[in-house]
Image (cartoon, rainbow, N blue to C red; front, side, top):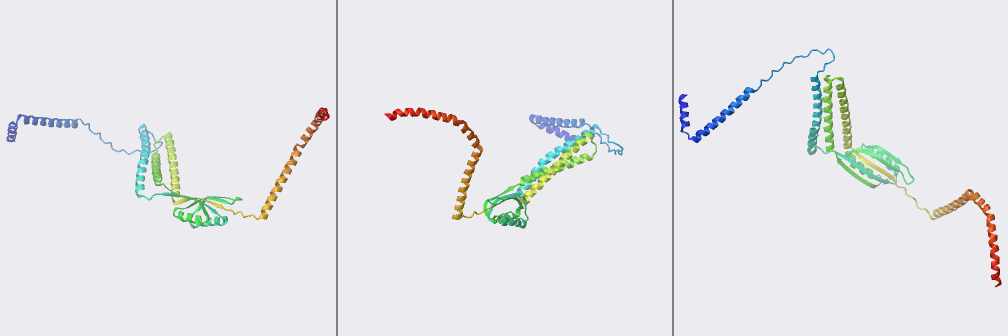
Length: 334
């Protein structure tokens, strides 16, 4: 051992001054790092001992609520709400990303068709047969009878797979006046709806679990029950929206209208003359009736004013004649 130390000292002395200085600097840095590590280890406080689990006594009355347990329960409630909000966003992104590239697109089909027919009753019966043959139904139907022809408007629901065949048969009921078809993709809407529904269901489950702990005072229990009622209503609403979206995908919506075309027959010459004579005599009788009505309604007042103005008018007329005759006599003599 002594020989090894002597050999190291001799090798150190054989080094140049620059090499011995660098070696001393490196040794000093290593000693400083070792001393710092040892100091941190010595100053670290000891970890507290883990308390053993003590079983609680049997519950014999109303639960006593400590401030610490109340704070913990409120923290659990806020944590459940926060996790619900975060999981809603994460789940929506995950469902949307998994449904869009690889899932089958969800399509909601709609169509609008207007048909004119000369045989309205037969077409009405054929419409019911077409719906029965293609397993469809009329969600809304309205028919109005007019002199110019009856009109039928209906909202039809048919399976999406039967839409093309149903529209083709509806066209055969008469002459097509208007036709329009559309297909709306609701894949993204359905993914978002599923994400919101799953998040609402998770929130409802967590709130129900918190209610089962029976550690809330009366005021907080009522607040928790109110939140459970709101979460349950939200779940029911989202389930109804999901059912409606499924119905839109399974059944296509068809706005159908059927109009009766009434053909007016051409009149003969005798019929036209008869119609013209009837119109002329009708207008003459209407004029006579108007005159009689005027005389009956305004005749008495006109007769009264004629009697009142008769005497003054006669005096004026005589005076005018008396002045006019002497002026005309000299002219006749000349």
